[in-house]
Length: 446
Image 1 (spheres, rainbow, N blue to C red):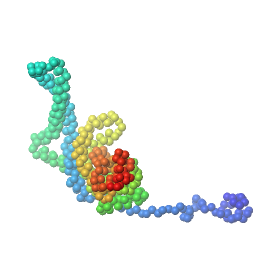
Image 2: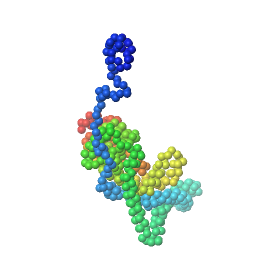
Image 3: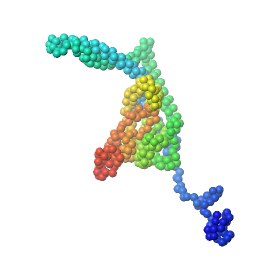
Image 4: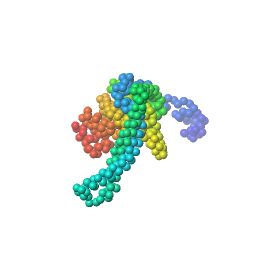
């Protein structure tokens, strides 16, 4: 250290220069070995404490009444479809129906070709007496018989073969039981139904008990203090407007997909959804209101119950779906050959039966959110995302959520109760329909 007046070297900590007698000013920078004085610290903004109950201090369920409505009252068709498909050999019936279609079609082509030749020869004899053809019958037989008789015979044979083998697979076991004792088919059927209901109940209990662990393993986490400080008041406000005395625990998933999911005791919102909505409070509140409406109605309970009742079919479908995500074409071929009856049963028999229930659930959740005052925010979120933000965690969920109504129809349903229905500036229809933008003076003048 040197004196500023005469440039003489100074001893460490000296207050006065020994050559010129000038006073040495001490540096305001403290020694790193000493604690920093509080007056030198930058000013900090105090963070208000956040009540964790605003974001669900502990996992909560929608209540036993919602459970009863979701499992018994509102989901009878879904329960019945899953129960019959999983416990009454529907995939085996589908398999035999396909085998009957192939072999019946081949037999029908052969028999139809032979029958077509006979019919065409008789027709040629008749026409030669009434109206002679310009060419001989033997010139028409090879092509006409194959095209007419073979095609018609193939179609009829395929239908007959499919129906016969499917009926055999569905009825023959029960006929064999009835041959031993007429009461056995009824006893076995009742036993299958009771087993399915018990398994469904046990699966529902297991789902609730392990939900926190499974969500944590899947990537969901608790909210940070900053996230809770922002999302907590929103959840509290939404719950108050919807008349909820309790709310599920809110979790955040750091994935970038714009999704949100309602579970039996939790609601998970993806970080990607917050980013894509640009942390717009109204839009996030609309999404949370939609998910809380699902939670209050017990829709996650209904979904878990539907999986549990069809547990054997659900496990096989999950196995096939996970194997199909592996990038291996030979494996895909093996899975589709061996498990295609399961895929067909779920996608084309079980899911279509349940489609009406899930579409109604989506429209109902949108209507509840709009009635709570979040219609504009929810409509803006739907218009921006252009696809359902209800996330999925399994292949079964993806198959079920595929039955959701398109966002455009959900927007239309939300607009029934509101006069002005503007779209975001970045919506594609704004370019095609001038005047529908939320910045348009035409729409605002309504």
